[in-house]
Length: 515
Ligand code: ATP
Image 1 (cartoon, rainbow, N blue to C red):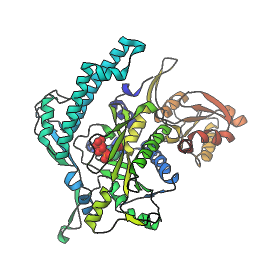
Image 2: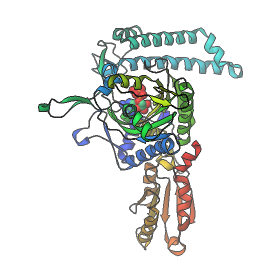
Image 3: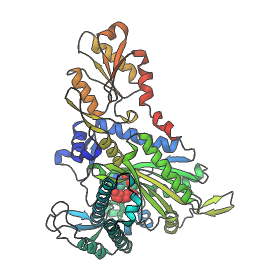
């Protein structure tokens, strides 16, 4: 069995393309950097993931409602949010390889390498000391490990100061002092670090009318902030309450070499939770717990997640963490949870001149609510599913199969209906069964190739159940149901099909775990 660490992004990318999940955008023109299209199976999986998030947020929480704001927003929105002035990444080029990097990412990867060295020391020591090994004590006292930790702290501290003050020279200094090399070429011949704004700009209206510069939104959150009072008033919402939204966001990312992990056009699922000032930390912890519970219920494996608390917080946040997932390239951010204070609403008050306050009946006073946000990338979640569910298995008979063990409720197709052979009235019978099932489930029908080959194809797209119609079906109306993961088959009557399969593929199996 293969696990995530052994599976490369390359394998996932080619499997996703071969089986109709993801294609490079406008591929006939050689594609467009970091832009991708979802194919016939990809769109189904993506819809299911979106539905799981939406229902968990909007349906299961009485005090959360959804909206769908426009992608284009008044340009002052982005002035108020700070994106015009500060949505920058520090960019650096390697003069030899001509490759471009984010300076902060190069430094973070360097830190991860030092962390790797600490882990190695720990593993060695654990072996040496056996049962009596005290990990915490070793971390505290071993001089070599302590040296590594001090080094990490010093780099983190210097990076924070440089990032906060916009001191690009400081970042370059770290890269030089730490002798950080281009991961591709090994060269240390770097340009200076420059700022690069990530927003895509376009024009609205004709030039003759005096067109305005506007931006493609770089996050969905601002659509929620500017509508917060509309929703609060028309929905008679009482604090605490949340507004959820799913939609496209656009960032002109500097480096985009990691398939759908970092895209220039992507989809976010965000929820802003409006709370009484002073209660934000309580809600921050509440949402941290709720969100990890949601991830765990999805069934990708608890060990694939970890929290990463932010030391370098954005200026507007008073607490922030990431939920990281073990992707093929290591643990990386999947979701962000941020306590954003009243920064955004206050900024919109100032720039719009409109009051965005909430009148609290119980307290008999008005205030600008504080906000706790949960923000997850749908495409990154998609990659988390693909990379943790893709297995290359060697079977007992020595043959192998590629299988996507996608949680059944999320699978693009739930049931494949397959006549054993394409004659003797089996296709007609199979189609009859299909006609019934398709009202309840996403189904497919296949009659070409041997049954073994058809099973393999369904395994590769992650179909949890294959229903085979054979000669016995014509006599007693029973079919075999093959389970994708165990490959075991049971024989049941066609009348039982909906119920037996339905229980296993229903999204409610996931949602029930959340209450
Ligand atoms: P990163 O540090 O990886 O650039 P971020 O901290 O800028 O991410 P946020 O602004 O917090 O990300 O966005 C929230 C979520 O949106 C992220 O956790 C991620 O899942 C998703 N996301 C952000 N940028 C991208 C992107 N370029 N492509 C795909 N998903 C993205």
